[in-house]
Image (cartoon, rainbow, N blue to C red; front, side, top):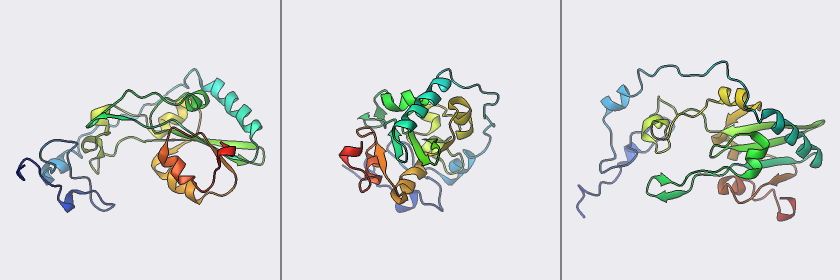
Length: 207
């Protein structure tokens, strides 16, 4: 196959902390021009949703988390929603959140993780989610899971209002879990990345 039909991605097209994404979602030619990349950063309206009301499940999920907290005092509890499964190329199967996660949060989006941190009086719950796609670095339209392709996500502030749980960026969770101390229980079989981050902290008996 000729180089024209099988272009390699130049090193400068790989995202770094300093450089924005400069690569297409898919297609023959991975690069995008500086002009197009710059133009796609501008003109986006503020679409933050205000005056949101909690989802109907919220009052029930709070009671369920309280019951779980009482069952496992002093232990960190990690309940993942699960990840998208690739069907072909950049096409994924329809997503269904793990039963445990949906039962305890009311949220049903991929990559979510509920973490219940032990306190002196019970647990503090945080739901970790993907935030809105970044317009500045090209994630919105160049990443295969950018919102231009898969649809709008709730912001973390919106998620807090909808589910009644503090929300944080799930991309920061694995690192935090690796540094965590104390007893941990995790629901296995849904998120390999989260399990790997906890590999030296959990045993089968504690799941």
